[in-house]
Image (cartoon, rainbow, N blue to C red):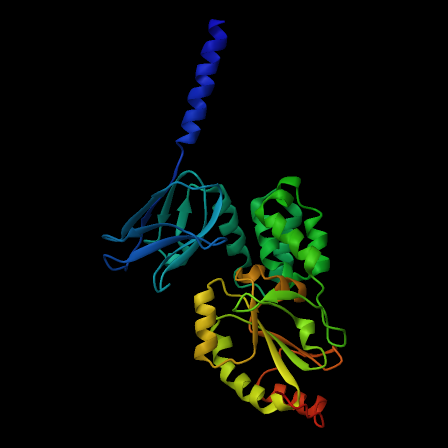
Length: 338
């Protein structure tokens, strides 16, 4: 009986010690001004985990992680200095005294070591070779968290067929984690409609929380536009699209804009600022947007031009190319609008 009690005490003490285990990261760097604020942010949720002040080129993050490992980025407010990193509930160190901030030596996280090793291997590779190397990593490391996180990131880029192939090789734990669920969600939703095919319909709410369907614009020539208020190239292109919209709207042209924003305030502010007077919808969930997954969007701005019969006749058309295509497909159509 005494042995049993003694064993339980040992187990309890081990359990308590594990619960007390917290993440910390002590950093040393060079060339950063005293008082610079570094922010530690969860890259998956956007949650601010911690912040630290640089003093004499040193800083420390010391906070409790809700889970471990966590994919994070720590950066200055202006992103002049930043570094993506896998955090673990360990004592970690960061050393950028002999290199730049992005390539600092980090210790204390096995996940980060493996991730950094892979990034160093693929750095400078041509696009196709890098893709092959990353896919090969997933195949050889089906139980590694990096494999599911990387496949979740690149699923829209690599396409549904390859994603399914790699997903089926993942371990049960990788399929059931947050990244695995994202991959499965993409596989279920993705239709990846192509030029010459009928558009894929979806329903989403506008800025007034009113439900809108792409098919509500049946009979119109529609530009399905994917954008966001934080996307610089999108904002730069908007004035051209405003001119195109004003020119072709009397002929039956409409824009159905899907925003990958998370902030409703920023979304509406940019709509008003740019005088974007067409249909706008969003789920305010960033890159997890349903329409984005259906259409396989891997970067914005992107768009699909749909003719009045509902057939996709162009993709990623902008400026003069969009105007030329509209002149081609609707030269004699002149629909009076209210």
